[in-house]
Length: 202
Image (cartoon, rainbow, N blue to C red; front, side, top):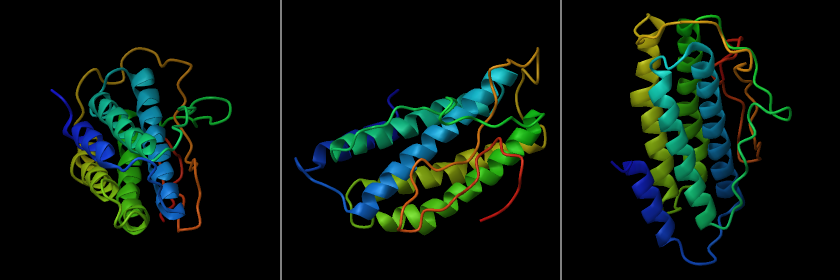
């Protein structure tokens, strides 16, 4: 079944006029959103690599890849280069993961709540009036709030599926830091990603 988010972004991209360009603020917001979603996906991948295909990370990893793909489609429609996902590389290292799946879920729940605020306070206002982007950003916010956040809240209480912390951790997986790929003047700010060890709010 084709993802509705992908279908919507494809349709919105086709509707973009040839040569259309975004304002500086809207372009920065689109780049920031894409960087954030690829960052989240890399974090989930690191957790799955360490703990195995444990819920909710296994399914949400696939969802994050679709989110990044939808944003990449809109970037291309507006003539923007889509950066390679470098999370986990020497240039963008990932910090150590929490010691348990429950702790990872708690960190990710905090991160997704921060993401919702970022979309509401910064990203969506930056693309107001841009066809396709308001709808896409709103859909991503809604998924973070209504699907991902509740899944992680359940996981905090041990409500994740087997396999549960089975086997030995893979030595190559090491979580992630939070570091925006793109900081910008319209109000971009740091927010949390699962895998972090501190709990400062924003």
